Length: 129
Image 1 (cartoon, one colour):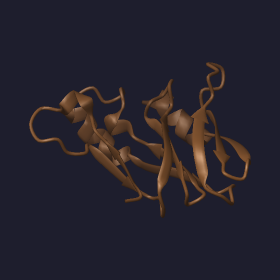
Image 2 (cartoon, rainbow, N blue to C red; image 1 turned 120 degrees about the horizontal axis):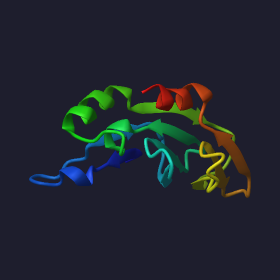
Image 3 (cartoon, rainbow, N blue to C red; image 1 turned 90 degrees about the vertical axis):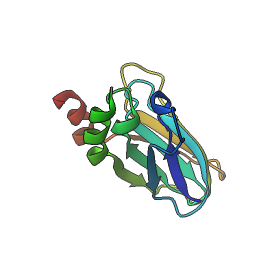
């Protein structure tokens, strides 16, 4: 359905509904990864040949309760789309380096690997809040 759906495991009592849904891909999504150091950053990639960088603050460890999540939902959404590939992208990954926690790569069917980073303006928002 070309959507990213997030469930908040902290809120699984009662009926289960996606806590956050992001539209944005025009075809199948093959890979999704949270940033291991800053889990509000999420990467997605798929057969539409694009890598999407998302801000998912409302379902991250940065929002500790329902009130935080409601406030954070306004900041959720697409940060940037990276369109460096010509074939389906099957894998995205964040760097394992603590010195470069905002660096990520994507690998596509044709063997192309692209390396990118979270924009500086988005990184600064983490430290400002």
